[in-house]
Amino acid sequence: MSVACTTGQHADHDVFAAQCPCRDVLDVLASKWSALAIGALEEGPQRFGALQRRLKGVSPKVLTNTLRRLEAHGFVDRTVYPAVPLHVEYELTKLGSGVAEPLGQLRAWVEDNLDGIRSTGVEEPASG
Amino acid sequence: MSVACTTGQHADHDVFAAQCPCRDVLDVLASKWSALAIGALEEGPQRFGALQRRLKGVSPKVLTNTLRRLEAHGFVDRTVYPAVPLHVEYELTKLGSGVAEPLGQLRAWVEDNLDGIRSTGVEEPASG
DNA sequence: GGCCACTACTATCCAAAGGAAAGTATTGAG
DNA sequence: CTCAATACTTTCCTTTGGATAGTAGTGGCC
Image 1 (spheres, rainbow over the protein chains, first blue to last red):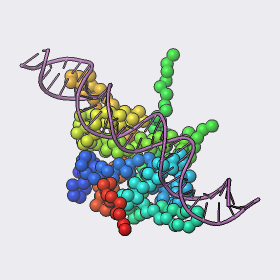
Image 2 (cartoon, rainbow over the protein chains, first blue to last red):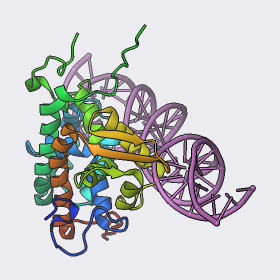
Image 3 (cartoon, each protein chain N blue to C red):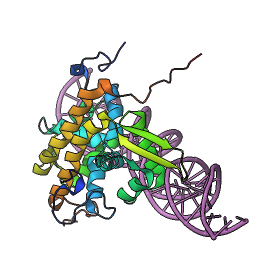
Image 4 (tube, helix red, strand yellow):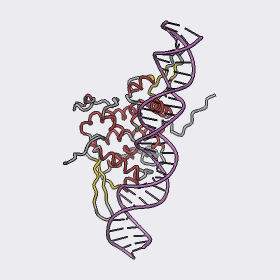
C-alpha cells in the first residue's frame, strides 16, 4: 500500500487533482504566513498587534490577508470587542487546531534540520 | 553578528524570527507545488513529464521553478541522461525524504478533513 | 478644544511569483 | 524537410507579497 496522497479511500478527494477543492485548501494552508499564524494561535487567542509582533517581519496588509483567508475557510475565528481602544481577537477553531498539528510538525522539522539544509543565499565556491 | 540560527544549536532556530534562514526554508517548503512535488517523488524517482502529469494543472515553467528551488536547497537531486530523446530524472534526497513526512501529513489532513472545510468560492453571507 | 497615543486596519506603489500558451533545442524516422 | 518525443524557456498578463503611509474612533493630557 502506497503512502502517497491516495492513502485513504475517502471520496474522490485528491490533492493531486486540479479540480479538487483540496487544491484550494492546500494553497491556503501551505504558505509561510499561514503556517506561522496558525502556529502562533496555538498558544491561545491573540490580538492583531500581538500576532504582528510574533510573526516578525509581516506587514499589516499581508497579516490581514492571511487571517481573512484562514477565517474564510473556517480555520480561525475573529472576534471584535467594540471597546476603546478597539480590540480584535483571533483564535483557532476546532478545524484550525486540527491542522495546527501537521503544520507544527513542518515548522519543527525545519527548525530541527536547518543545519543540514543549503540556504538560498549559498555562494558557489569561486575557484580562482 | 550571527542570527539566531547559525550557531549550530537548533534550539536557537526560530521560524518566527525574521532573520532566521528558517524563514527561507519554510517559504520554499510551505507552498502548494512543493508539497505536491515532494509527495509525488515519494513514489520514487520520476521524470519531468511524469511529474507534470501527476501534478495536474501545473505549468512547465512553474514545475521547473519549483524543482530548481527544491534542488537548490538539497531536497531533490536532478540527473540528466543525455540520451535521445533527452531524459531527466528527479528524486528525493535523504533530506527530501525527511521533509516528505510532515508534508505528507499535511496533504493527508487536507484530504481527510475537506468535508468540514469551507471552500474558497464561498461568499460572505450577507446577513441583514 | 486640539493633539497625541493606541489599535486595527486600508491604501498605495512596486517587485516577485503564478499561470496559460507558444517557442526552442536535439536527434531519429520517414 | 516535417513529425514526434522530451524538457524546458519565453512571453504576456494577473495575482500576491512587501514596505510605507494614511485612516478611523476615543480617552488622556495640557
